[in-house]
Image (cartoon, rainbow, N blue to C red; front, side, top):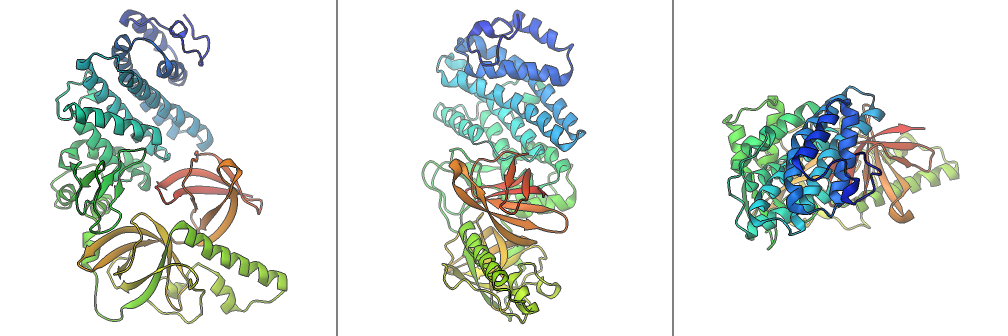
Length: 505
């Protein structure tokens, strides 16, 4: 029997009957096909199974038995994609991700149907979460944005298991790749931990080792559904990934999961856990998991301590760049010949002597007096990558973006990486974004005009976009005739979406 159409949802359109024998015969026919062809056939069938009204009890064992083939083909395609040119590679990678996505969603549909026998539901949840985790891994291998749908399903499955006290129940996985972790809680923790690792910010060769590390270290992840004071990370159990705590002394509310990563971070720092990752990567990961404690410990409180202001939010960044762009246009229209000092005031690329944010320079720069901002004090530290500041008034959030401005310095684009509270003040770890900044109007959702912040450097270009739906390999037209091609998603949170891009004129 052949598939008449990938859009048909009646059981008769499936390429096999809902029996083990019929499916085994169909799987055997796939084995003679090239991996890409077999994967495409399987993907079309899985798309039908996501929508089928077949009896969930008959369907569940078949879906579980499809897992090894789906994983095998997905892994094969992922390896194949790495050897292909970028445009073709993404099409192959997309199929690799879709296989696991559709199979996990088919399992979720069976669970949500409420037709399954009670004793089979934990096994169904266990397998669905495992496949979601592998889908996360393959998505990260190709730097895709996180899937809101899969995170929403993860939250739903976790809540079902928690309500029924199934979280710690040991479940015997039928296949090698689905045996460890061996509980629903363990698989959820692995998936959460892998997301907390922020794999899209690492080299592709490090992503698979990060996934393996998450699997073996998930028992060290501490979680609580009770309101908690000062968690390291939190998960809202909605449609997004876990996030760093918004600020120091911040408390989770009911319905959120509080997450502590300190135990794991210290174990990595002490060398108690072996991994395939290079030591520089382990150090970077440890700093993230330990909430930048060693960075804050290097702060030098001796003078000079420098006053500055931080203007949080993508809107503040856009407002500043728009004002600079407007000034530039006025000067061009007026036919003025700008002096070197004025030209430098318009530039956001620091000169050599400005690259140390603590050293004064002599030119006047634009300020943000007409915009809301928070006073901060810059503190000396031994890091070349981060700027540390102290503030008793800041109400901005970890994960946000903004402009850091001080007298006689060009304002700098900063990412808020972590905040630590100490009595009546907080320390903030800022990560500068290096490159020349420009702002461009682009078409957003529903034809609405939004603004993109483009960062160009010698080696690469990035764009910061308002949160929304974006697909890799999609094109964004700029008013100046340049086209941005979204190549990889580096970060995606409630404040912005950050992509590596190529520019075509």
